[in-house]
Length: 60
Image (cartoon, rainbow, N blue to C red):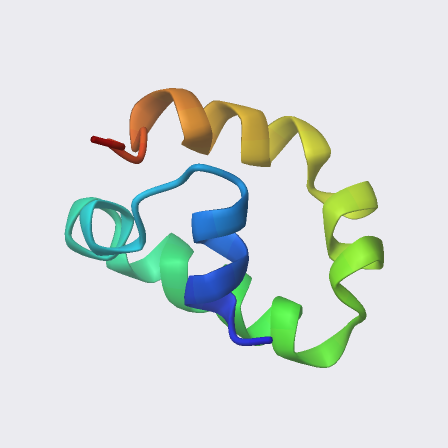
């Protein structure tokens, strides 16, 4: 799984996130690629919730 797919599963718009905060996006992508997705979720749970509110994925 790639980071962008993970963000989509968490209802986070990866494009908005990348354009809105490219440094944080890259930092999190590096960490994501080093650990298991479940471990990433456990480590960054509160951050993921904040990102979800800020970069909500629009579903039609």
